[in-house]
Length: 270
Image 1 (cartoon, rainbow, N blue to C red):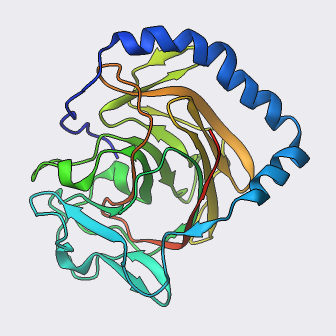
Image 2 (cartoon, rainbow, N blue to C red; image 1 turned 60 degrees about the vertical axis):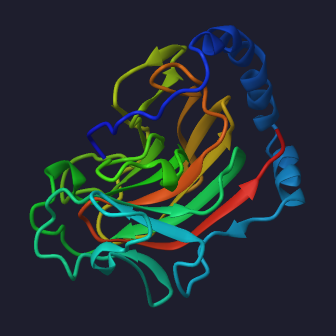
Image 3 (cartoon, rainbow, N blue to C red; image 1 turned 90 degrees about the vertical axis):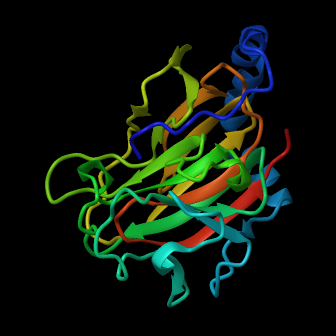
């Protein structure tokens, strides 16, 4: 995604991030880094929980679409659908994009969890789609609720794990970070750039790619691509500095056909 949405109203003061930043940066996240040094121990802990599929492979049960200019629940031009057991973003009923961005929201909010999505880009971008949206989708995490979206709002305030497919030539990373209505602490400072690139490889064509994200409430997030760490950052927050502890999960419809083989969540202990 590219443009910023209208911001959500904050309910906490900016001072909250100032009071918590030192503690979280200095101890909590550091503790998690130490634990991650022992993969066997982490694997044992993960096995205590269970991966839950958010997509049943048959229909959109549990998901709600929201398109710019349309009420929540209206699946504009049947864009989100299930095709051969795959959760699909399709544009075969569109003639022109006209900036009608869409998102598909899962019904439940999450705080501390891992999310794993297997995705690929297919076909050609619909006519009129912006250049930056070609082979572009995203996992919108820590997002606002679909009910709080305004009728003409482009994107939910959220932490976007940007999914990109490579072009015929050149480097184009995936599992990047974009921040519609949000900021994060990156390299020990609040980074207000809208998008930050990961260290992933470039994935061309229609190959399947696995993106996994570890989300630890307001502490921070880590992105993995095919099992390799691609980027990490801390203290996700709204534009006004309010830390984000939990939120919705949604995927995008930004003008390029996309398919998801699976979307799974594993809740983890705080």
